[in-house]
Length: 128
Image (cartoon, rainbow, N blue to C red; front, side, top):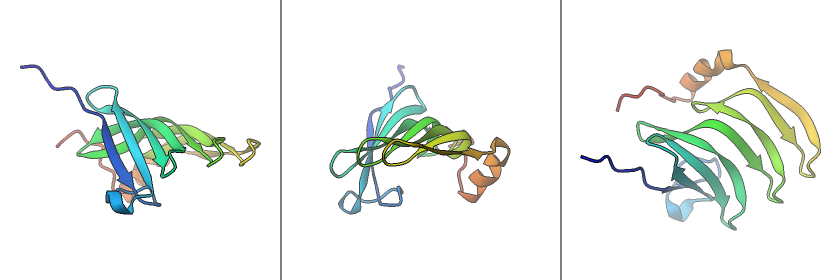
């Protein structure tokens, strides 16, 4: 029996980037499948401006940041960019101001990722 391919998904988000009802949403996360558990995601605001682009993984019905990400200001310039590992920022993140000028980078130690994941209640096990 052939396994069905993951379908594109839309998740509505509130101002805090958490799942919300469509009527109360500020943003919309558009997920396009890359394989059975990975998705390319873009977050758009109500005016269809790009807010975030990056890669997500699906675990236990949740879509978690996992891979390279870029955040954007409303004018379209890059606000920050860097890596997520299973829902937690890791490594060096480049940051910019509204005009595109470089700000000091921010470093997120990979050694503290599991502790931060636990405090955020992110379960990355593959059990369903």
